[in-house]
Length: 304
Image (cartoon, rainbow, N blue to C red):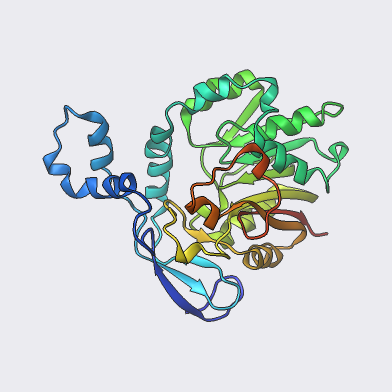
């Protein structure tokens, strides 16, 4: 089997979601509930919601011996993915909209958005940004902050987001929901695309990057943040549901290079997986650069 990014041999296989034992009793119980669904009465709706789920994410992850990229060998179908993200993903995050509405000043105080947009604005100029797209946007904190930072310019915000409960929130924030699922068809082209913890969820990486290239204006740029599987990842009890793609810095750069993007910047951020296993939290001051950090943050420019 050959790596879809660099063409090297895929020599390592790891069990998805179970490369080591479950990280907590809570996780173990949650994963075990579907096996005892027939014993759980419907009068206990909270438990029934979890027990009735049969995850479409399972099997082995195949990992490249050279660039380190991993991919779920038998990913869910597109229909299964749409069902999962529209019906199940946000049901586990039912208070997200209320929390976002309670944020002040266009989410300027959101630490992830602050560090992500600070990273991007080191390399791009607000004067060059008119149309922005955030994919897998949720509360669209990063887009809102970018518009605030570029307040001397006209910045139009667009999102692609399956969670339908965000509709009123987007309207009040002056954000256009351009699509629910990616890929989508539109005549609009974007100067800046923001993706935060979305690319690891896509089924077909090549097809996704090809569409992204077509959506971005000449010399436009794309921000990407994904989990970093380069250090410790396969040796620790790490939750990877519902990921399909597993990135290292090298594999992320190669994937974008293959689709005519130049890397402007890339690095490791957040705390390390070892720190997280020791119970260290990601506090607002720990979203910055960190050697062997558990996020990869990259900015890519569409080549001329």
